Each structure stands twice: as structure tokens, then as C-alpha cells.
Amino acid sequence: MTAPRPPRPPRVRVHNFAVSLDGVGAGRNQTLERPFGDPDPSLLMSWAGATDSWPNRTEPGGSRGLDDHIVRDFTHNIGAEIMGRNKFGPVRGPWPDEDWKGWWGDDPPFRTPVFVLTHHPRPSFSLSDTTFHFLDAAPRDALAVALEAAGGKDVRIGGGVSTVRQFLDADLIDEMHVAVAPHQFGDGLRLWDSPTELEDRFRHESVPSPSGVVHHFFWR
Amino acid sequence: MTAPRPPRPPRVRVHNFAVSLDGVGAGRNQTLERPFGDPDPSLLMSWAGATDSWPNRTEPGGSRGLDDHIVRDFTHNIGAEIMGRNKFGPVRGPWPDEDWKGWWGDDPPFRTPVFVLTHHPRPSFSLSDTTFHFLDAAPRDALAVALEAAGGKDVRIGGGVSTVRQFLDADLIDEMHVAVAPHQFGDGLRLWDSPTELEDRFRHESVPSPSGVVHHFFWR
Image: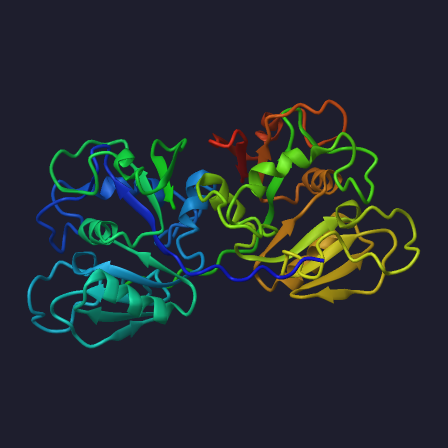
């Protein structure tokens, strides 16, 4: 006879975040046409786009090996996401109107509450199963709100680079998956100089994928 | 604007199945004390037992790298399991009574309908979120019943070795994850002589884990 395992406490997780060999996760000069900025690091996510589980895939034939297992873990036990305003869109400063509703069309892949950090809050809205809220709050305070909304599930820190850095610097991340793509960018927004610099705080495991990316897993 | 992705057809999956370097997934002479038989291949699953997501784990401190991501995919989109009678228990032939209810205590990790293939059907029963049914049926007919019960989700073929082999031989498996553990067994029930023998029917990717096992992924 075994007793049912008690539910574990919720965790704060980064998942499917991607950077270049030199640690760059986004370019500068983000625009509507170049959501990842300049130089364009959309190449960083091509490993995920090749998988069967990639939410935007419309054709059959995606891979179902290691990368697919990682991609399909994106929603596993996640109850809310926190993202930076620059992940949400290219508009800076006060919102000219409320027309911009994110990059993801009518059916965003989050399917939970999403909290967008911004100094310019605006009313919440829903698209399909996702509701976007806007918060002017420090990481710790935003996290308290997101954990409440997640109802006992985990909170994903969705990026971009600056947002992940802020939560790392505030020591609020429990678990992190970062895919390092086989490209050098040189310029751009940098997550780290080297993944080993987190080893003072995290267990760290790296696994090369047949696709060419290296998956880095960090946990406490 | 993107249209919501249509749900994909259900798949027949093997997940977290483990064999030795020489392809042995279970020993002979299974008993109540030695559920995997003799020589005891419980070592085959030690990689999974070391992870945070292993269902029987009661202590904190499990690993949360690659192996954990694989283990926690066990329930992902699964709506039913089919298992052989030898996975369900050590009793052979007609049931002396209905006392035996599996190896898993009051809270089995399946949490879906489970169909046990046996020439000696007995009444269904439930433990926590899992209901065990007993079917005297060929693989294809059992699969039709399980797919119906899964309600559009995938069906996991849970083992043991003979059951996985039957479904492979009937060409009913869509996707398979097998972990090869770094031990030689010599004698026992064999899944394959080599994983490459499935490459005429499946895409095949192998990924060494830092734990010492090699994860093999197969898909169509």
C-alpha cells in the first residue's frame, strides 16, 4: 500500500528558451517585421519548429525524438506565464490604442493567464483559452500574482532575455531549460556569458541533441 | 490570424520502456518478490527512479534534467494503457480469487483505464483514478477497445516485453521510447537484438543521457 504522493509546491520555470552559442537570446531594434530584432535570431528556434509538437505547425511530418519531447513539455503543469512587454509586442511607451494583441493570432499557445510586465498597464483581454493581464510590478510582486492565478501549478517565465535575467537576478527561478543553438550572434541581448556561471546556484546538465542544439537543464 | 490546430489522430505509444544493452526487458521466473524475474532487471529502471517525477518517489531531491523530462512525459496525452498479464502480476492460469490487484498499491500511477490482456478475464475494478479491465483479445481488437476508452487521446502499450513485441509484430505501434541501461543480462525476455532492426519501419534517434542510459526514440 502506498499513500498518494502529496502535490509538490509550485515552481517557477523557464522552458524552451533559446540562445546563441555566445548567449544572445534576442537582437536589438525589434520591429513588427522582426520580432526577435536585428541580427535576426529566429534561427534560435528552428529546432523547435521542426518538431511535431510545435504549436504553429500546420503540416504533418515533424520530428518526434528528443527535441519533440522537450517542446511538448512546454505546457506541462503550467498554470500561468509571466512575460516582458518586449515579448508581447514591438510597441514601446504608452499604448497608442489597444489594437495590439500579441504575435500569436486568435489562438495563442499559452492557454493560461499570461501576465505582461509593463509600466503602462491596460485592460485585460482574452483570446481563445489565453487571458492577457498587464502588470506594473517588480518580479517578486508579479510572481505572487501569477502564483495565485496558477492555482497550485507552476509559473513559466516566458522571456524575453531581460525578463529572464530580472527573475534570475532576483533569485526567483527554480528550474530552467535553455536550448543553445549552433550560431554565433556577437551583438544582441545576452542571457549569459556561459551557462556554467549559474552553477553556483543550480544543478546543471547539458545534453546535445541530434538536431544540433544543446539542451541545458538547471534545477535547485 | 491562425486557425486553431486540429487535434491530431490518437497514437499508439510505448513510453519509458527499459531494456539491457543486450535487449533484455524482463527476466524469467517472475515471482511476487521478483516482479521483473531472474536475473533481476530492476536495475533497468534505476535511471527513472532517480528523477523528481518518478511516481513512487517519496523523498525530495530527484534529478530534473533530461531523464526527468522523459519520465514526466509518461502521462502526456495518454487516455488508456494496454498491458500484458505478466506486467499486471505473477499469477498464471485461472485466477484462484480476485485478491491480486496489481503491484501498485492503492494509487496506481496510470490514472486512466488499463486493459490487461489475459485468457482468463475477471471483473473490472478501480483503485483511485485507475480502472483495470481484463480482455481476452488479439492486439488489434484490444487496441480498438482501448482507443474507444481513450476518448481521442493516445494509447500506451505498457509492456511487458511479450506484449510490446506482439504489438510491434502486428505493426500497431506509432511511437516508442526505450531506455537502454548500461548492463548486460544475457538471459531473459528480449525486445530486440539491436534497436537498428526497427529502422526499416521507424525513424530512429538515440540520445545518451548523463545518467548512463541511452534514450531511443522511434516514430513513423
